[in-house]
View 1: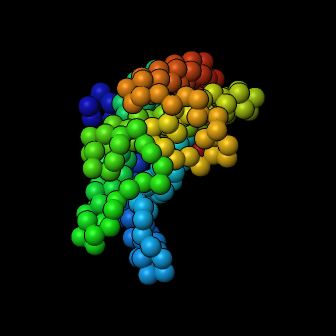
View 2: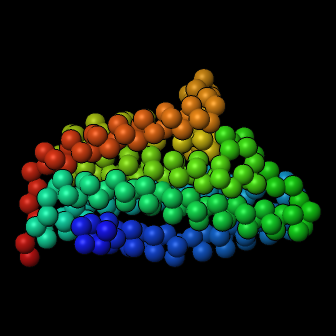
View 3: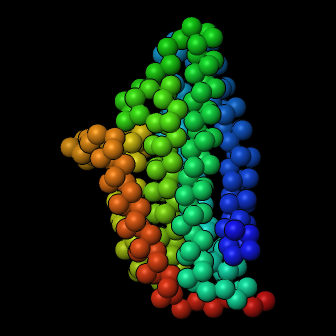
Length: 237
């Protein structure tokens, strides 16, 4: 992998390392909020679920943007083709999604353990397709798909704006449609009125994951089409 896909290793190392550095203080913040709720109120639901279902997805989107705006130029500056970059982009988004999902799942399990020790019921305020937080494989699968969708949406939007502003504006609603199934997976959204819009689309888990993967393929194809035709030259200092 390092010989034929050096940029894949570089992107994953940089972005997963950054994710780990931010994951620890995020866990600490979640724990402090939990302590505050316990001191001044009643703990009746997961605090980590509020954070995990909202904050990391925007981080995944920003990393997808960075993959295009930073590493595509690096790829070209080293004499490699756009096609070579795109071949490394897909496994990068998949690897990043799984790494983020593992961190989120560990957060759920640590909080669940604390709840059990203190005799609290570890439940979520909103129902999710994976059932409860004890379903480790369900958590890994759902969040891996969610982060994959958001990272691909970020890469596609960044590619659109890198080519021209008008195309970038057009890719924004496409990116939202690609990321939309993630709202059905986690059961908690941060977009106003989105819950009402997605309410008629409550499918079983496998159906929702299937729709999500179709969206991922669409996002990948659109990104491929944009980047392949992108008239970009590496900047020379």
